[in-house]
Image 1 (cartoon, rainbow, N blue to C red):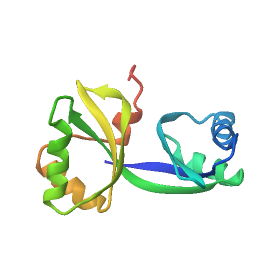
Image 2 (cartoon, rainbow, N blue to C red):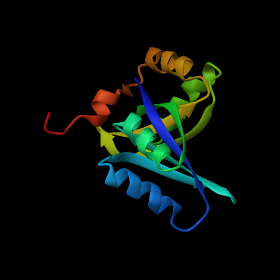
Image 3 (tube, rainbow, N blue to C red):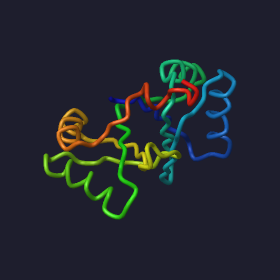
Image 4 (spheres, one colour):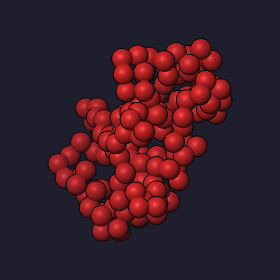
Length: 146
């Protein structure tokens, strides 16, 4: 159920993002989804990548600062209140959201969101108890022809 997210810390300099993306491309690594956040001094590129171990290795070999964290991909009903219900579930058990971002595809007419929780195992238990569908790595990375 947990997904590995690769985070890369980038200097706020022209070309740093391009360099990281080019490193992955040259290694034949596809990015499934990503988000980029910045501060005045640096940015954080967060990515979901099927072969996260290879991505981590090639990025570190290229001199990047890389961190791998556990995140969850959830199906969220694509309607008013769908996200509020998910947040109510995790809030009810004392789990905080550190950050989240939307995925670029839907699953079964549901939105797919990536969440980083401060207690991922507790979040999994609460979400599953409440019937929320967590998307496994196998589901996320399966070929549409499978």
